[in-house]
Length: 270
Length: 235
Image 1 (cartoon, one colour):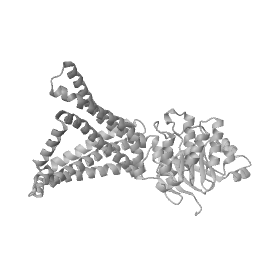
Image 2: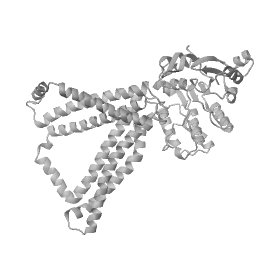
Image 3: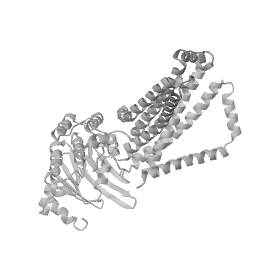
Image 4: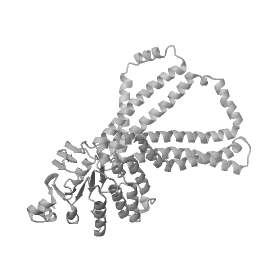
């Protein structure tokens, strides 16, 4: 059932994301042809302005993609579960947790793929500018002349990707929790959702401030020192990454359980 | 008890200070068409929402097909809400796909046949459909399932008499006779002839539950007449 929910979520999201990714890649490819000329060579003023405008359009495209991605993800949860479509979704024979997590998983994958598409658009310009041969040589040189090819560095990068995913999941769960809290209100639910988000953020800051001011930093410093003593730099970073992953995982669980509780026990469809 | 499809005991639901359901107890057996009859605000929609798991009661017990509302009961309950639940981007064919994936009792050929009969193209987007066509599409989806319990919330409210006939015909010719149909309405004269049983609900209390034959025989009047008499003060 979870896979089927993800399938429908994916089909819906593709209506927005495919054209958006396509637009970004086209802008990237056009810039790949024009940018090297006006960046690295002398060209006429007209071509320089046209190239600059294309490059500006690409940057605007990046900003638009980030905004649209967040708006679509938020709107999908709100309209799909908390408005009339909720009558359809909450009467499917699935648990509420599955509904929440299917939206989260698809959103995370889409955020990741949007990042990949943005990177691809940038790489197209870089490769076009310096040439594929030089690009590949440089790539190989970095790996040969640094420790990046070692297992420890690879693990550090892999855990960093996991950390980004878990932190992103925590951010999305936080938004979901705010929307679930906001929908408990009888009127002005969007306004209450924003207020709930600000409230949760304020609470988070207050808790972390209390911790910062009251924690025994000497003891924490000693403990961390003992933990990383004898470790290489990447191993030490992995330890930090694991601590951060655990922190965001706990936050995600808290947000998830609050959201699930509201949608299961306090659902308030109009 | 063993033959009960729905068992409701001492059910209570409050909205702030308003009591929507007050100690409701009700047992429904399979194989009946039951009218849930009461004026606006009497608790009909709240009861139906609790039965299909959209609302949680404050206290009391609900058992459908042997289980509390949850994924199993949702797989055997076919629900027609009092509002369209479609998103504008959807085509009815998309929802057929969804129903086929999630409900094993969904009869897609029957749904497509009904669409064909009513000249509803399955690739038409919801945003291009009239309000009436959306309502018909939703009814087709609900009645194309071989469910154990159909929960129809005000299916004939706000439609013209010709559409009412169509809706009632669709319900009668498509429901699973081994299941039960619970129809909430305050327009009793339009559906009285198809009801086996009637449940009268007022201010969150069930004040009558009997077969329509018993009611007519005992009271010497139609269910509609009895309803008008009993609810004259509040209606």
